Image (cartoon, rainbow, N blue to C red; front, side, top):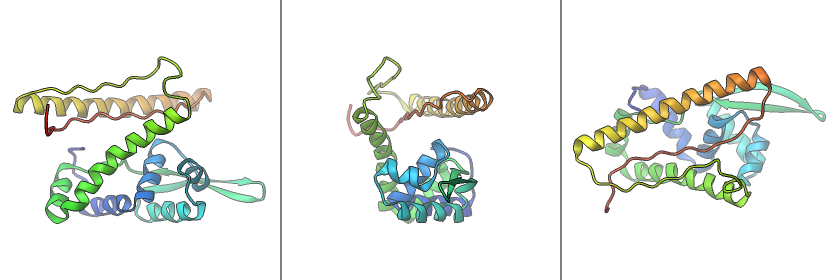
Length: 195
């Protein structure tokens, strides 16, 4: 979870963007790369018209933007990207817990389900495990309050560094036209019900 303040209007846009499961999945995909509604629909196994509706809603919420239009076989292909990261800050999260605890739980499960969906698709496609270029770690541990704070700070540093890695990679690809390699990264630190 981010610790920076986004403001009420942006938070409400984020909540509406995440309120529908398909719209939330579209937003996550557009965060990772530029894509057309048809590409998103193909990836999700969803109806293209429905995906297009949700992508346009993301644009109205200022969570995505049209980056270009391309002529493809007599039609226009609209390509979009996310304008904001899929983040909820601490203040907004606390407000959501107070105002709508069931939806807060739904969002938490959706965050992790997105990672599980990435994992399942990668395994099914024969991508994950086809070579040694992957890392999965589960580290159940017992810490004190200071240790929990330090672990959460480590997660924030990981996320910030990953953003920089993605940025530098995009710059290199723009310069060289090199291959784009989709990745999925999830680092979660939370109090567990058991150890």
